[in-house]
Length: 283
Picture 1 (cartoon, helix red, strand yellow):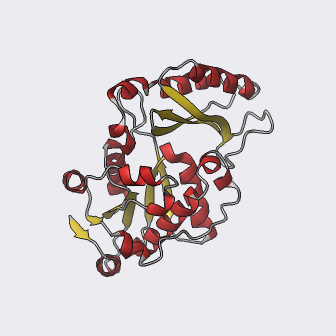
Picture 2: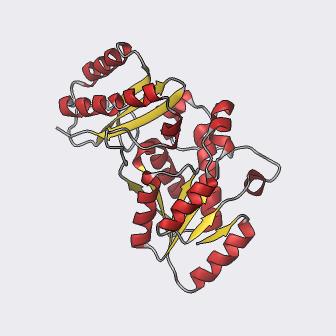
């Protein structure tokens, strides 16, 4: 596995690989890698001749500075993990290498996707995401890029950005990788207290009950039920729950059964914020 820290070095290396007509699969991460990340890398390896992974904790997508400071960092462990799977190139730039002397976000128009769900609570978050992903795409210039569906809104926003900026990159959304008890894998999970870790699978259990009882005409009833479930929970605080159409991320305005809808949720377990979602049946 080759490791690069500068844009110039990795661009030079990848340019030479492209001249040999090698296809590049890219997995951008913020480190603190887990099995979910590794599953993306394995998918990339099946479909591409070269797999590139980046590790960069992006300051412009954090609206909470304390969350940025406490975000788990484990470069040495991550490097060993990547060496154990099919990673060919690791890119670990510094903040200065990416932003030089201007740590700020580009402004994007995601046609309303950025105003839903996460966007209501994290105002500049998606401008930060768009900025770093676009920058990394320009550096790596992959054929395909792989993202987990846990951050489904982010996935849709990246697809929109690629389309609007006419980037020749295929975005691949991959299924949510879960712990045995159903908790969606996240780098934040290691920061959960023992008590909150034991309570956290309640999130996915609730989503599964929503899926079981969902019909297009009972969205309000299900939303009220979820709110009541978390009001009664002693350790988990619901930030939001919503059912939205996958393409627009808006609450369905009609009861059409052919729309693809998902249930989305954000929950605080102590001071750790967890998100999850689930595809709903159409009938």
